[in-house]
Length: 337
Ligand code: HEM
Ligand code: HEM
Ligand SMILES: Nc1nc2c(c(=O)[nH]1)N[C@H]1C(S)=C(S)[C@@H](COP(=O)(O)O)O[C@H]1N2
Ligand SMILES: [Mo]
Image (cartoon, rainbow, N blue to C red; front, side):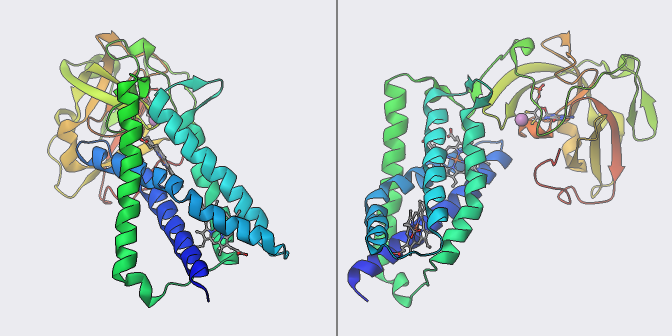
């Protein structure tokens, strides 16, 4: 086998590694809400993603060679679809990074980004199955390790150039948080977007509805307390807002809990998240944002405020807080509704 073919194999293996690691760090970027971990994840994710661009010249050679051969092989469609989706994914990631959080008609750049990333997975599988590339002992050679380091450095350099250029030009994206989110409506709750995770819609509720906390039923008057927490709601949709949230701290309502217990915070819609008992002192059942009662869209009458956690933990329209034995991590890492 010629050296050229081997070089092609290494490019393909590098592409596979970059794509798999991009998917993994993208998911981590959605799960992590606190600094400095969020910064590490976002920079790594960005460098891996733009690292794909660095490999374009090498991959072009492979694609042209395959086209010259003109033999009809399986997997052609998958390769082309994969190419289109990877380009859209990287382009929409960069658009979000440069232009910040913006709604383009019915959709945001980040929605396109995550949508194309998830839909490329089956095409990636099909393409790799059609063109398997076996690892070789020489893949652990010094030369290959140096090339891998070179690719990493090139990815970081392109990432730094994008970030530096964006800052120099004062583009809106340069002001985003470590999670990648742009600021919308801090201090002005009514300017925050009303966001649902997947399929929920704003329920019609009665102000007299009661919230079940362990074995007590509490009304709005009892929950409308004076605990104030300044916290950032950071939606994985790409925006964040800082507000003063008021209500009652959950540890006051729940009393002492066994150290290994968990609590389920359940919405009237069935949407729910589970937390470790140790988290309750940081959690707030909020009735107000910025001093005014919550609007229906933002979770009235009562929503959860979970400082340091991404928006999908901030359960709206709370119906019940339940103490359970099951560990908090025994739940889907992301909500399913
Ligand atoms: C960004 C990701 C990738 C894109 C956009 C892409 C796209 C393509 C396209 C369009 C072709 C030519 C048509 C075809 O034979 O399917 C091709 C060829 C090829 N791809 Fe990929 N590919 C990617 C990643 C990979 C990966 C991860 C592997 C394997 C680990 C791989 C292995 C191959 C091989 C071996 C060929 C050459 C087939 C031949 O010479 O006949 N590719 N790729
Ligand atoms: C094949 C998969 C993926 C590729 C190639 C990719 C690539 C990229 C690129 C190139 C950027 C812009 C980097 C920058 O200059 O800052 C980006 C940003 C981003 N991606 Fe991905 N991505 C992928 C999957 C995902 C997934 C699955 C998620 C979430 C579930 C995700 C979430 C994000 C977020 C939140 C940002 C913004 C980060 C920031 O602004 O610093 N990505 N991605
Ligand atoms: N019941 C319920 N609560 C929910 C959601 C949902 O879909 N259903 N979405 C979460 C997500 S993803 C975010 S970002 C915040 C958004 O809060 P907001 O609509 O007040 O801006 O609510 C969270 N709480
Ligand atoms: Mo969200």
